[in-house]
Image 1 (cartoon, helix red, strand yellow):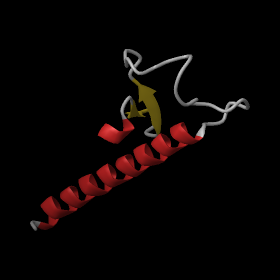
Image 2 (image 1 turned 120 degrees about the vertical axis):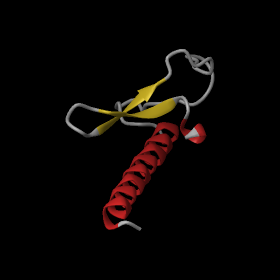
Image 3 (image 1 turned 90 degrees about the vertical axis):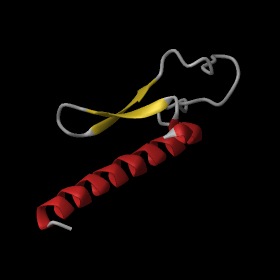
Length: 76
């Protein structure tokens, strides 16, 4: 998850996952760095990469939790 910082997954009320961010992160800049969004509002490459990483993290976390439940039920 360190590579994803200052972004992190947030579980919504409907069970879907959104993306949160650390508003106090000192690396934010309106002058320097990479843009997060394209002019049309779509994610810029740097944000798209982080979104893909976060989705992978959420998927793998869910897979791990499912495996643990299966294991405890079947007495692995």
